[in-house]
Image 1 (tube, rainbow, N blue to C red):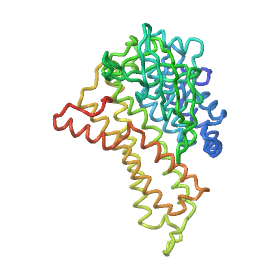
Image 2 (cartoon, rainbow, N blue to C red):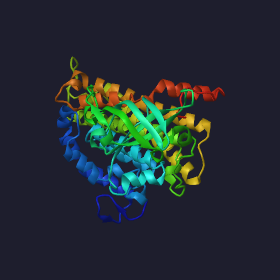
Image 3 (spheres, one colour):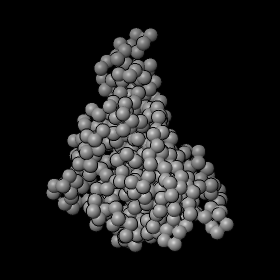
Image 4 (tube, helix red, strand yellow):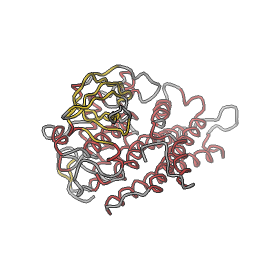
Length: 404
């Protein structure tokens, strides 16, 4: 993108992608310096949130007509992944808030104005699991229920919540999404975990919350490229929804794997010896050379798979074409493979650093813990993705997931 852009409110003649990457470079030291405190508090501190806001991170996938940056998916992948160099939880915020922005942009204009008209920088978290009881009214629905793992809820003004769509007999026939102001919800302190502690992924509770119909949507319509929004001139909102939902989760995982590699190379540069051997500098050992090369190649492969499919999804949207069934299955499989590559690379780097990997003084242990939690997001389930692709290759179109 070569247009004049606005990231921190100032005009720049640099391409937007370059400007965003420079903005991330500028805030990484802030995020890194706050990482220990954020983990202890189980919450990103205001200084980190302000840095992310200043860098334009929370507006990556918001529409330009509403003050957003509306970047392409390849740019999104690289920008959010780079945040992991400072703090894995901050990169997760980059994913979750932008996912909320993107979903909101599929709702009718009236809903978008509700959020962005008076506050173009309003943040939206999203939990699409339909874990609620719902009752229909003349002008919308009433929600009761709990939604766990509400990442970013402490710094959001709105939440996109999943709910079951029922027929007259009470049978679930679809899934829906409801846009609800955080002021109508209660946060239950429930996020006590080994990694990604600062995402504040607590539980949201709704007690008889009324949601007008213009703030709701059926996921079947969205998943089949027929969202309530009618801004067909905006390429980013013509993206394949099933493929994009999965791709949005990947960048923090990629970034954490790359950060682990960077930290391992730094540690090796200090001339660390290999215990119980004659190697006083592990860099001289063929085993070290082979393992670091393998880890680096696995991470490069993960980035290549992800960037390729981000580009494919972008290109299809620009052409106004929908990804066919097989291509959507390929996206799931390839992105699952990218996560597996990163997981294998992480294991190699832990072996390279040995027991010292887990010392509290070693930043790698937090990166590893964050990675282990982030890479197990429900949309990144490798076995489900493998089953999806296997069925498709065998000509079986009946699938076990609606996100396809």
